[in-house]
Length: 289
Image (cartoon, rainbow, N blue to C red; front, top):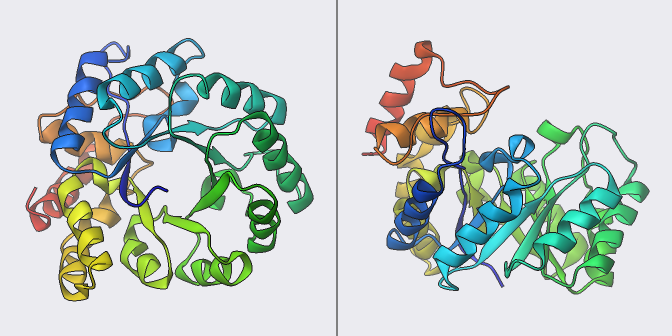
């Protein structure tokens, strides 16, 4: 259903920390012009933990309206209490999004059975297409292939998973689940994940190099592996350095240098440390940004 380079969109802010909705419109226009294949709004890169309950539907509705059905819009659902996740999924489902990206519960470290029941409860509450999101480096919780298989084989609208662990995990998911949509959530291995069976990316780097990542996906799916490898190599240093401090800190710095947003984050995140500016600038130069 969703394929190619999907950007995990940042949330632009004014200097006082308020959300810059006019800039948000401009970012959507930028991605449409650069042929981004889809948008995830209010995921990790969108700083969802600091977005208020009142702002959440406003941000999503703004992106949905600006996109106007030209590409898919997928909204993040990230709550570690199942009841709250259900409530948020139901609220978002009324906002004309095309799908939900649902992260594993963070901090409380559920068992695999707990994860299964969490996702099943959300699936029963919303009929929208749902993508599971496995990011153990942040949640300290690993959604294993056997659990993913239980879910996808029972719920048709659980369509896939955003996976960050490894290339090997893609192979394990394909073997366990069969025809499942797998999205790379780790830019540094996005081409190897495509080669292992992923159908797309949910990408941080796509914020700053959207056309290149779109072109890489197109080349790969057209069988032009040499071009895909060339683009992947060109972006290698950028993939690495966009995580030199916690995301989206480096990404917002690069976007500010490109003149697309102000370099503002909400606490507890801070703007990029000055000691990393030269390294990130070198990565931008390597990618011809």
